[in-house]
Length: 156
Length: 156
DNA sequence: TGTTCACTGGGCAATGTGTTTAGCCGTACG
DNA sequence: CGTACGGCTAAACACATTGCCCAGTGAACA
Image 1 (cartoon, helix red, strand yellow):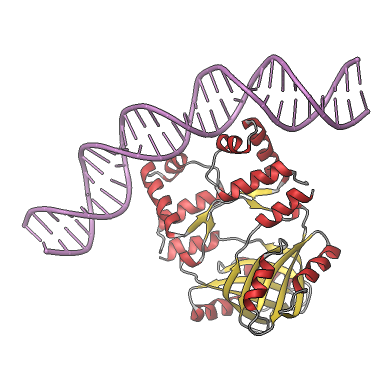
Image 2 (image 1 turned 135 degrees about the vertical axis):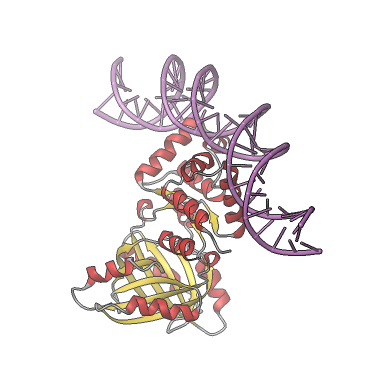
C-alpha cells in the first residue's frame, strides 16, 4: 500500500508522458523492463493506479460552467437522492459530508442560464430540502495528484 | 468542438478499456484504423481529451480522508493565497467561486487528526480570513464524465 | 544454511505503430 | 454543372513494442 521511490518515479513519468511504453520507461528509469512491468501490475492491483481513462474536458464538450452545490436532505431519503443524482449526467461527482449540508455535488452546464435548468433538475426531487450553489469562476489549481505522489514517494 | 457519435464511441471505449490500442478500437468500432487515429488526434488537439494520465487513488496512497474547505480571502490577497495553496500537496484542487466563500478547495489527509494539520497549514496564511470545512464521508458518485459524453455525443 | 523475493538481462514470436499510398464518395463552392 | 476538398477505406511497409519465457544474482529472513 505504501509506495517507494521507484513507484513514485513510475507514476510521475506516466503522468508527464502518458503515452509512453513500458520499454521506454525502463530505459528512462534505468531499470529492467520486467521490473517496471511488475511494479505497474502491482500498483494497479493495489488500487493505487485506478486506471488510465481519458481525461475529458467538460468545457471542450460544450459545458464550460462548473458549480458546486450543497444539498440538505430530508432524513432517511439519502439513498433515493443518490439514485436521483446519479441519473443526472451533469452531476459529475457526489459526496456525502459532515457540516451544514448533507451532500455536496459538482455540476456542469452549458451556460449560466443552462445551470438553472440543471439545478432545477437536481433539486426537483422530493428528498432535497434546500440547495445552495457556488459557481466556479476560476480554477487556479486543477485536480492534481503529482505533489501528493511526490510526498508519498519521498516520505515513506 | 462539438463531438459526433463516433467520437463519443471512441471516448466511451477508451474509458472502459484504457489500455486498448488504436487497431483494436478500429476493429470494435467497425471503422478503419486511420479514422480512429485521425479522430483521436483531433480530439486531443481540440482539448476534448486532455490526456491519459494515470488515475491515482489518494486513499491507496495513504490519504483516505477527503474534505472540502470554503475559504474567505482578505481583499486583494487572492494571488498570494493561490500561490500558497498551490504549494500544499494535500490541496488537490482549488477554485474561486461566487457565493458566501471566495474559494473552495479539496483536501486530503492521512486521518482526521492529520486533517487538522493540513487545515492549519492551509489557513495558516495571512490572506485567509476564515475557513469552513466539510469532511467527506461517502462518495456515492465518484468523478465521472461518461454520462456527459453520452449526452454530448447523442444530443449534438 | 536454505528459502523466498525482487531485480536483471537476454531471447522469442506475435502484435501494434507510424506513416504513406491510392481510391471512393458526398458536399460545398465557383 | 463541374471541380476541389475533406473524410473515410484499405493496404502496404519497416520498425518498435509487447507478452512471455528463462537462468542467474543479491539481499532479507527464518
